[in-house]
Length: 124
Image (cartoon, rainbow, N blue to C red; front, side):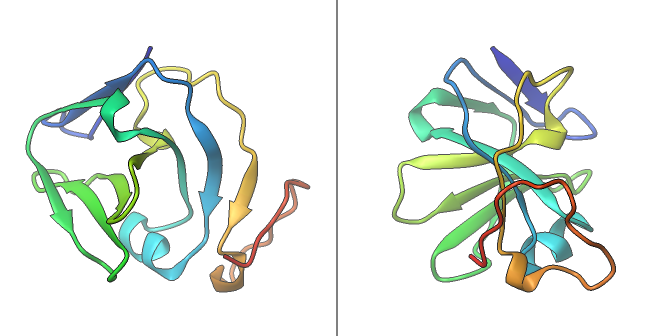
């Protein structure tokens, strides 16, 4: 069971499903909202239990982003037409037991860092 929360604890989430797509996102939207690279994994939406009031922001025509209105923690990413939901690996309480698989949206990465870990990289 993975459990996570926002910084202030007003939003909590948990899943017993095995997360997939463990990645670091370098897109401009994730960098702006998180202040850096956003690490996430996804599970079927039906397998993620969320408690607390998530504020959703439709950052694009294809997806929305969920965050805590009290502390500002960026917790979730959800495509409008998909049945999965991504959650922030940084919000997990305790060890995740996960390993990163890839870097995504590296075409948008900041010019102030390099990616040197040898993981696969995709432009999108």
